[in-house]
Amino acid sequence: MTRSRAGDTNVCGVTAAIAVIDGKWKTILLWLLESAPRRPGELVRRLPGLTEKVLTQTLREMEADGLVHREVHDGRPLKTVYSLTDFGQELSQALAPLSDWGHRRLEKLARETPSREAPSGGTPSGEAPAGPLPVS
Image (tube, rainbow, N blue to C red; front, top):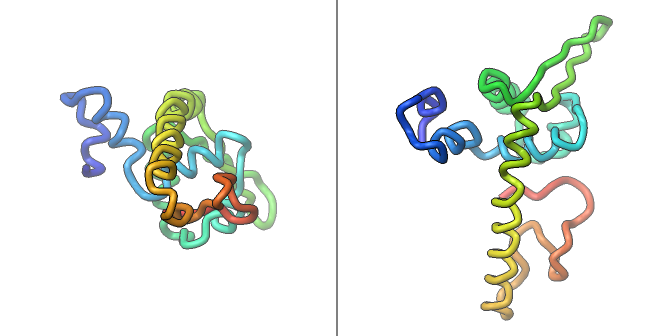
């Protein structure tokens, strides 16, 4: 799906929603920003493999879509903080049932193939590992 679909008013609602969250980092950024406002450096540290350039581009797209608020505080150095807008919070809440479904699917796959190792980024017990978040 292309970025241009995010503004297309002639698509179904699911397509419109997916166009806004399409990409490797957007859903995990939504998840991180849901719990608290964050500075860009913290986001990069929490997500190994995410470069500052890609983070900036992704946050700009999310800001253009009305999901993220960017606040710049005066001072030296400038301090930038990102948070979810009410619209972003609404999207995050709407995605919660989909997340639950995804976890149930992973549990089902694990039960069906018990000889297979734990999914990448997970632990055999199904608990999230400590430290940086896994990215698949």
